[in-house]
Amino acid sequence: MMLRLFRVNSLYFLGELKELADSVASERADAQHRGDLYTAVNFATTTGLAAHVAAGDPDRARRFLPPRARPLGAIARRRAPSL
Image (cartoon, rainbow, N blue to C red; front, side, top):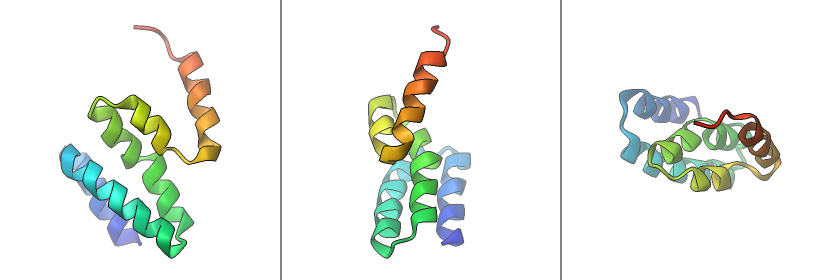
């Protein structure tokens, strides 16, 4: 579990965004299949979001959030300053 998180987080910090996006999706699916809620939520709320936002797809990032976390995204959008 921790090795997978470390590997994906390393991709994020190295700026390997394409590989990050590919890895996060498969690792999250694997964690969900194994019933590993900690790892699945970690991928969904950290590096997974960053990968989609960096790729210019914030809507996909919102869909990537777990259903219970989606209201938090709406709150953040209301409070975010307009540029």
